[in-house]
Amino acid sequence: MTSQTQTKTTSNKISNYLMLTVLIVVALAVVALLLAVQTFIWGGQDSQLAAIILAGIGLIALAIAGFLIHQSRKQAAEVKLEIPKVMSIIECQNKECSNKTIREFQRGDYVFKNLDVPCPKCNSKQMITAAYKEIREKEKTYAV
Picture 1 (spheres, helix red, strand yellow):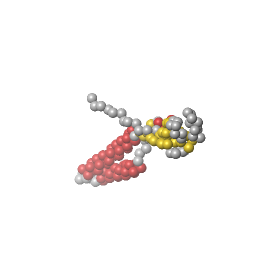
Picture 2 (cartoon, one colour):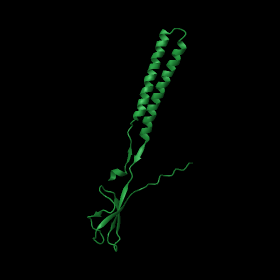
Picture 3 (cartoon, rainbow, N blue to C red):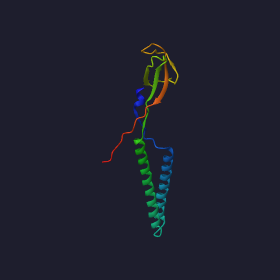
């Protein structure tokens, strides 16, 4: 179970909702740019300002869409998931022995499970009495 102690990094997957939003913004930006070109070519002298404003809106929308994709990929790459280490406590059932062993959790372990492995001290039966997750304290950082 050494794979549980490793830190996993998520892939650069972008949320479906964010991708849908970006695609809608890009489509609207392309429409704005096409309208700007059409207005500039066929509109005459009076509609040049409208064409420039539509072109500006389209370019700004494309820039925002690109920035959203860049930031979401960057943020997804920084997310790290740490799988906690789970431990089992095994105690001897002989009251005089009171041998206690801590081991890494194994598939099929549960509390009050009788084990086939005898106690190393007195050779009586053993039982799992607890299972818990190890909690690591976060490193403290001090501002200098």
